[in-house]
Amino acid sequence: KVMFKERPANKRALSTRRPIHNVGINDVYYYTQYKDNLGTPYICPYYKVWKSMIGRCYDKKIQSKHPTYLNCSTSLEWIYLSKFKMWMKSQDWEGKVIDKDILIPGNKIYSSDTCMFVDNDINLLIAGPTSKDRYGKIGSNYRKERNKYLSNISIYGKKKFLGYFETEDQANKTYLKAKSFHIRDVAEKYRNNICLYNALLNHAELTLKG
Image 1: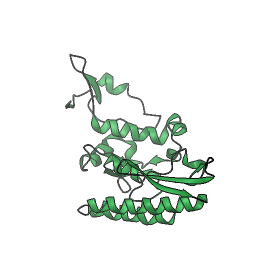
Image 2 (image 1 turned 30 degrees about the horizontal axis):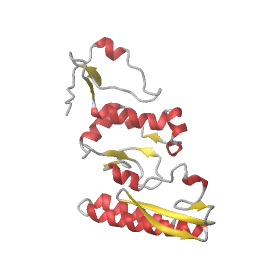
Image 3 (image 1 turned 90 degrees about the horizontal axis):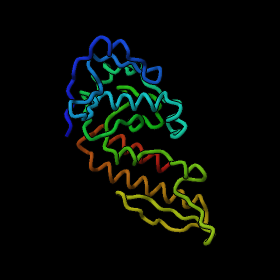
């Protein structure tokens, strides 16, 4: 594991810093990226997460590739790296990803009140429809050779066949029911984290309603 060390930045380095995507302010006193004498690269873990978050909110190129980030923003406080770092240090973040809408479904603002770090599989579990799903109802794929709608679901990384259906709506409802049940099953593993547990149960209920 590469260990990052906070090496104080000189005045010249600090004076040449520019806002990230014209918004984010890197106001910490040390170099957030550097290489050692052997050329090994190091990056501040707080800066890495913060910069990625700023990009999702304010980089048009990223948003064009991932439309789910359209209209996202950060709180005024989190425009500053130092403020975000302070919050992140207080969280259980190692090996996890930051999530903005597990606590508040549909939320578009990254802030200390709306975000938490979760395992990546949790993040994927509650993710919205992919680009493929936008052409029809989620969980429903028309199969011309059968003139029916196929529905599959991924359960713990393995694809599960849910069946063929006469209508798109039937396939969609079957998928949503299976997805809701799966989210509830995952939630049971997090009973010791009441905040995450309740958030997952809420998502399970919302998923069932479509």
